[in-house]
Image 1 (cartoon, rainbow, N blue to C red):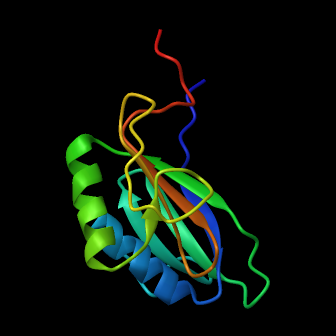
Image 2: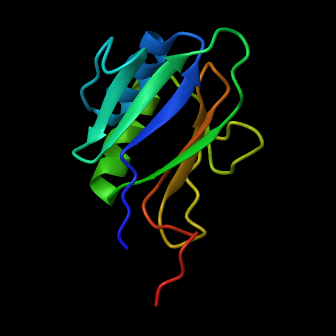
Length: 129
């Protein structure tokens, strides 16, 4: 069986602000409304991030995206231009460094809702072979 993740609901205090920020960083389109009460970010032809307004009780989540080296550099440039602090490890100080320990490039940053976003070029969750 082949399964593809189609959409993901992401809790946010302000769904439009969160959707706009991620869409701008990834350089993809978004909308203030879509199907249901969501602000969709059209990450690619097969995946939509649906930001849902939750008020103050937003659970902290971790989202990781694998991209090619060129996309990594473009997104990292947008993170830097936006003045967003980033780090090389999932936790710890914002060292503005890129982690290259797993054969690719990895950075982490946090959004105002507390979510930890990860961007990488090589998956460390899957071993080649």
